[in-house]
Length: 503
Ligand SMILES: [Ca+2]
Ligand SMILES: [Ca+2]
Ligand SMILES: [Ca+2]
Image 1 (tube, protein in one colour):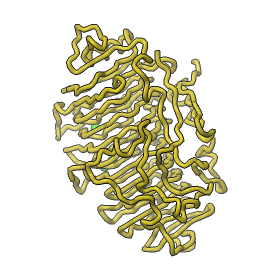
Image 2 (cartoon, helix red, strand yellow):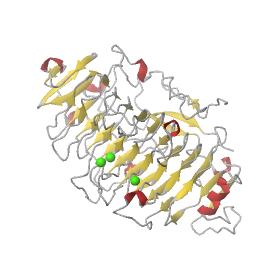
Image 3 (cartoon, rainbow, N blue to C red):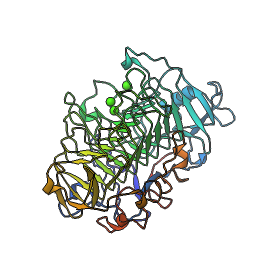
Image 4 (cartoon, rainbow, N blue to C red):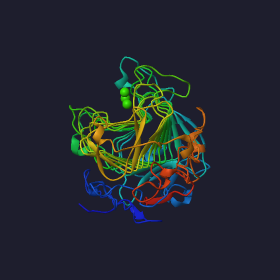
């Protein structure tokens, strides 16, 4: 087997982040960073390394159509008898069949709403040196509307998805996928990249990474997929309200799946869900970075049921362990927990994360991380307006600030942390995190187009100061590297660019 690298690194600002993704098999090199999770020891914490904020884009994020030498165009009124040029576009099903059969490598979608009453299946694969492409034509506004798919409340496993991606080495970019009877998109292949897509009002999880069916064995569970600068919102399953997450890499997913720069808000269940169960065993390690989970557990129209889990980042489940990693991410105003191990017994890594005023429904925690043995919390903090308590057991922490029972605590140097043991809580402090520590605490109202308002023009996240520590805060220099603790998103994100090879 050849061992080509599929995604070559272009380092723009720092050698902190070094990505090398192997592709010789489904299970291969994980994404490597200089500050790798495995190197975190009792004396070394995971900081952003002096960067004020980070982000990621691909080389295709703003590519002109001419980059794709073998492209065919589609439009909502396109026809199978047309020629596939921009002035004589195909319909999408015809165009996909031409890519599936190898007659073309790229489908460029012209502006408009494309309506479907059944699932689109993608089964062919590109290669590391020649990705297959499905993306909006440069500047086009594209919606794939699956809302006319029928929905069964009694047999939800029969409900159709929007796109079922079984192929590998696909780049899918710049499209809104809405209304599907199940997932907006299910990613079941390997080494796919999904960038700047929006998953809106689907009737199960917006984007899910899991195997396509129960006959797929563990060595072929979907791996090394990158989900970059996507937004998922208002996904809600009418049968139970307890399944539709914004993003999920759960149940049956392999190694190396990454979410970077994604926003998940107002989904009926969780913002992110990394659930595993004993019947199928542990899933591969998932990396979440530069992401926001907000107001999950309730849709924008106010739909919420007692079955809605409403966690921002649900980082496991079922007592089946995987040491997932979450970095530079913000959980804000979720119905219940901001971050929860959800009974993941393995060593989670939580670095530069902010839990901002979660527990809107009451009775839960900003941070609920007490079952992941040998986990590590670093450069992170909690903020609450409703006196929410954090819960940490079984892990170590450094350079972090949290609250229990109306008291604030800070842990500076690496310390075993156990909020149930008064001698292992760190240092009690009279100066916790208050509204004056932030550049802004004014979270835009429900209904705001966060995919627009909270992103820079390159697609990376910028909250315009909301939830970001002000330079005047005591904690703006409290991190292990002498910088701000918590998540950081700004107009000056240090962007890592992934090169996607196309022909
Ligand atoms: Ca489903
Ligand atoms: Ca649930
Ligand atoms: Ca869930």
